Length: 94
Length: 266
Image 1 (cartoon, rainbow over the protein chains, first blue to last red):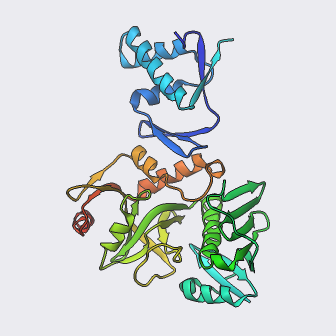
Image 2 (image 1 turned 135 degrees about the horizontal axis):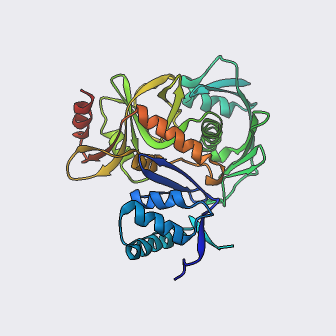
Image 3 (image 1 turned 30 degrees about the vertical axis):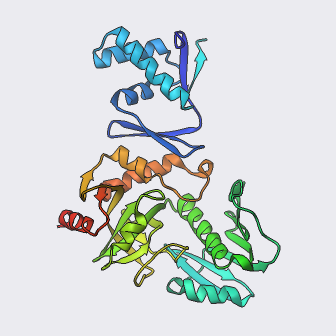
């Protein structure tokens, strides 16, 4: 899997705020705005450039009481979607 | 010659030698003439040299504190440090190029220095409140304005909103090549509500959550994204939405939408 052993980090070219449980992300170069749902917001707030993909999945499993398989699939799908938009990037674990 | 104009509490002294500027200012900016001490100084001159072909790569470019403003028939600048600017304008571009210069300088100052908002919106005064209809091109701003017969349309393209003493007010702007109707006063108006326009088969209002409303408010005109203080803008939008209701306005091409707005106001 693409995400295994990787650490996601936020693009320096985004600005964001979380309002009433939903994160609003602005891609500053394009002035494009994206609103994340509850799960997306939870994952977004975990992305700090230190937590690995696996650590994020573990947190999602516990927070939303879902199976590890489902948390892995849905977290990967979400991260792939926002990575494709240039909102996050990946780096290898040190 | 010098004329001072005030828009949204920013006073600019415009200095020029040519009669053509005086004629346009007298005609289009008269309600905005001011006797107050100017915050900025702008020098205007005519030239027969400038004729850019649209679209330019970027009409606003920044280098440190200096912003260059270029549009068809216009080459201008504004220095944020000295608060001085100037424009060379080809006579063929008048009055549009003069409006473009003044509009850009004021928009920059309002957003970057004053934490104000300049929305792509129509602003309609009904009773003692202004209703702001937000939307991108083609969303129905002009339709709404033209259907607001018994109101004063401050603008159908720009709405300036500024925070003063913990309250938000909107201001009239000069006619910047948009549609307006009725007598504008250069004053701070109370805001009734802000709406996102949705063309539909029936008229009704729908409350939307703050995050979606903030997304809808990102219709900042003219300024390149890399120069906008986005996080501050989002904080200010949040403050605005704490004070001013925001609705999705579903409307048809008649004035029935006003009945929905009046019902909520009651």
